[in-house]
Every structure is written in structure tokens, then in C-alpha cells.
Length: 387
Image (tube, rainbow, N blue to C red; front, side, top):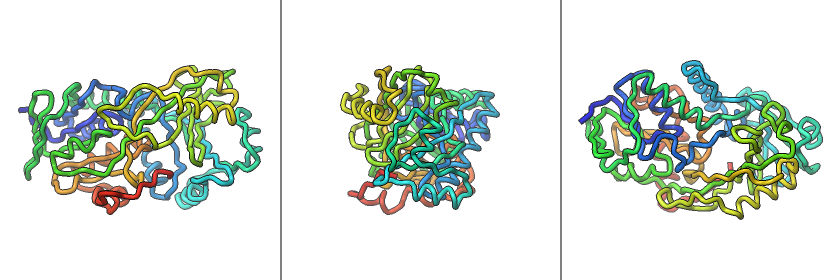
């Protein structure tokens, strides 16, 4: 049996970060366990890019985003590798938007984050790639950009190992037991013991938590991104075209050319419910067609054809707020669920989990992300995903 201070279960975006921050404090007393190969594409943490931004719908999220930028900067300094690329960012909303800009405008103002309010004409003057109706308004925040997902995950894992952590891949868990003195994890035919356990298993979260009699009302959805070939790739370079979010339903979001010779657009649909174990990896033509229709209407220069399409998973809480907390009914098991928008916070959430596990508390207000909040105790909760 191997002995450790802390075990991290799951080495995707949040788990890799937790292993890294734990290793910075505990060195070789940290074990990370992944059921698949490292860097696998079965969940929701890979591909080239995720949006990072300070624009959010509550002041609490804005403050958390500020701290997320600091966590990524610490990783960059430690690893010597860039993982965040600033492009600026647009939140775009037609007049009848189901999400709208008011909460984002107010939250950034309360949190002291500067932004610009633009009409459609000004958006198209600055970024002539756009075709917008007169009813569209926008918020522009200059610090928005790209969190380099796969590169950041690799940097977290590489630095976790350099700080002494042991990371084990292709090691599915078969049993977990907890007592007052620690946690025993059986995985890949080996037995491991630690004082504390962090579960960062994404769409598989309820499987390990089932060993403690805990199950959250999570919904796993199949999501899709499409890389479209632009007429003139240089016009969509990161220094000429920002990340963006279309703030109504259906909600689309996208990126400049990065990682592939194409523009990446996704449909934040939350409609295709699936199962992590039996999910399809095959892109759906209806999702591709919807994304191409949006591009034809609003970004015609980025619609020459499909370069490639990829699928991933969201793991959604009913209110689409995170879970970052001790697992109810346990003394030494902690977990995080990203609710389909956590990658920008991944390094920070990993650090927060480590602080909870080692210190019992953190300086950040995690009350909105409690694991015992009412909506997570409701067997049939009302689900609201458009935030």
C-alpha cells in the first residue's frame, strides 16, 4: 500500500491543477490518479482553447475571475510557459436577448472592472469581420482572451511532477473507503492511502462519490465545437479579432484563429443529455449546421467550410453554479464540479480545493458553491442553465 498526504482523483483541468498546487506544498506526498490516459479527450478539459474573461453575471464571479488570472500567472511564472493569451472580449446582445448585458455591466462596475459599451456600428468599425443588426449592443473588456486548455493541463501536470507528485494514468478506481484517519483508494489493482482525497472527476463525479452514499443532481450534456476555415485567416488572428459570446438563446461563442488554421465557434446549447460512459464522439450535423448558419449571418468571412468538429462534455449543476466544497457526510473528501464554465477558473479551483483539504478553509467566499445548497438536495430540481 502506498502512503500519501493527499490523493487527487481525476487529472483533467481542475484535477491537474489540484495536483500541481498540492505538490507545491507537499512535494512527493501527493498522488494523482487518472482512469484514462493523461490528456484524454473523453471529458471537457482538452482542445486548444477556452474563454477567459472578467465579464460575469455576479460580482462574486468577477472577483473569482480576478483571482483566476493571478493563479494562471503564478503557473506561468513557475513553469516558464504562457497559458493565457489576451485578445480582448465582446459580449454581444440583440435587443430581445434572453441573457442580456445588464447583470454583466452591473457586476463589473461593482467589482471595479473597466469595460466599454459599444453599439453595433462601433463593433463593426473596430472589427469589420462582424455583420450585426442595429439592435445589437456589446460590452468590450480588454483583458478577456484564451486560456490554452491542453497546454495549461500539461503545464500543471509537468510542474506537479517537478514538485514531486506521482501521477498515475490508466488506473480506474474500484473502491474507496473513508474513516476518521484518512481515505483508502483502490485503483488499477493498487491500494493507496492518504489523509485526504480530492475528487475532480468531471462527468464521472457521482461514480466515486457513490462510495460515500452521495449523488448530486448533475446533468451531463454533449457539446460541440466547429473550426471553420476563414477566407482570410490573418483577419481573424488573435491580435485582430477578440473572443466573443452571443448573449441570447441559442448562445454561441467563439475564438480567433488559434491552435488550428481556422476560427472556432461553439453552441452553448445544454440540450443533448448523455452519459459519460456511453457518449458519442461523433459530431452532429445539426449542431454543425446551426453554427454555420450563425457564421453565415454574422461572421461571413469565417464560413468557407468546416476544418474539423469536436465534441466534449458539460457536467451541469441545476443552477449552473460550481460545487467547491467538502463532500457532505465526510471529514476528509473534497470535490469540485465546473458546471460547464470552469476552465477559466481551473488553476484557482485546484488551489482552493487544496486549501480546503490542507487548511480547512480559504480566503475566498465559497458560500455560493456549497455542496449542501438546497438545489443540490432536491431530487427533482428546477434547472436554469442560461447565465
